[in-house]
Image (cartoon, rainbow, N blue to C red; front, side):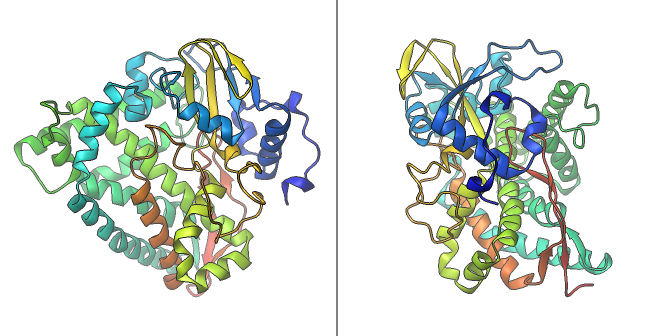
Length: 427
């Protein structure tokens, strides 16, 4: 179904703060974005009600590509330090703890990013990129064995999409095997948006969110302390040891950066893989085209990221009064930059509701918009996606989606909780 085929959207009945709305059909979501771009490019919404958190003043939903770019490129006017990954206003230390670099402004942002960037040496990056092939091959081999034990049935999320980026990040950081199941569980809670399937106490998601963060931070602080005593050839050792202008990261800053990796490097890549498999199932001609032509790997990955938009939005807050895109705003106003809407703006993308794996140029904002907060791990994510889909074509050509996806009830991550599939040669 295309956006044009959907019924007209009653924007007065739309509430982007309603978590359940986001678990609905994607056609409705994109039709709503199209209507907002045309009629209310700066639409105001009340903030979601959450236990233990005072309801804030509301926010402006930004849906046009040009406005997302304009706001992203003016960090002195539209800051991140008051919260980039949360609609609600929380204490500054919590914003930074859960958002790390994403929820910082200069000069602190520049300092931390310089230290972190220095750890991503050419040797470290090449070592990580080389490991992606081994991880993907092993995960797909395990998925084949799982299918053989289940009469061909697998879950694309649990058996393919989740383990690949998690293993890459944990290998990179040197997280021990016995801790990885807990890392997956706690990262799911942080990104759940309060989804009752992923949060044990759905009536108190804030406490679950805080507890998950504390447990992940504790793991990484212990790991950082161990690396000071016994260095290893991993990213945690590099983060502990790297110094820029006489400054090093504290153990808490390393823990915060690890949480960011789980958000930006684990969850988003997982979403791109699982939603990408679903997308190719829904567009079999495009799947056949990509499978037959490895030369499409680069542009196809970019189109999957544009189409899926794993992170739906990021927040910015106005530091002073002003105007953007014809919209007057006041100091303290909140803006949610809807990347998923900007990525289908017809002012930028020809036929944006068509999946075109050869699309070029493709200036999507799936890794964030221009400015200081562009995704530090975009190169690694692209490699993971290219390797994964090429391996799926070559090693699991009999993979078939067999049922409807179970969508995450979250406005922030366009995730899938489950995607039933079958390996027809394993039944």
